[in-house]
Length: 169
Image (cartoon, rainbow, N blue to C red; front, side, top):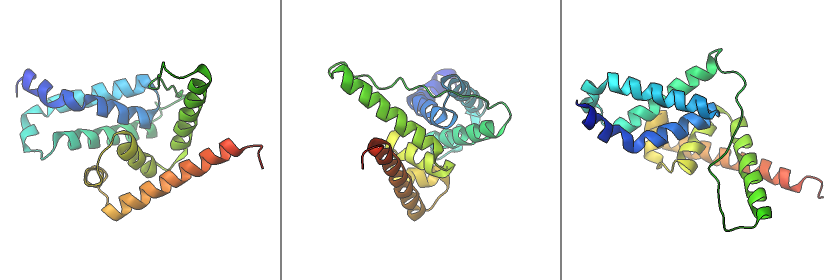
């Protein structure tokens, strides 16, 4: 496989790899490193890529496994949560601050979820994967994916409601 062919194949889903890595590793720098590492691994397997049914699914699985290994290693230290994706110039400053605060709270709550719930919620609600793709990526049955997603959403919703109701009885 030539470099141009490889880039045409991999670049469309490169951002998804980064977002998955960022969700799992939290740190922007760690996610960038992980994404670059996965792209290098994909390049080393470029000759055998035609044998894969879905290169994107293979790459997402590699990213998930790489990030989980990274988290288990001693290199995963103090990682700071930074969210810079939310920008809306039309709303008032107060609403911007409230929205940013809510996004930060949702991210904090998601980070406290069990790994499987975190990954399913990330893939479905953030990356917009369909259930079949999630089943394939995480090697889960459709029922298990739906139950895991439901539990993750319920936990996020309950903890966010607790946060917003704090001090109001």
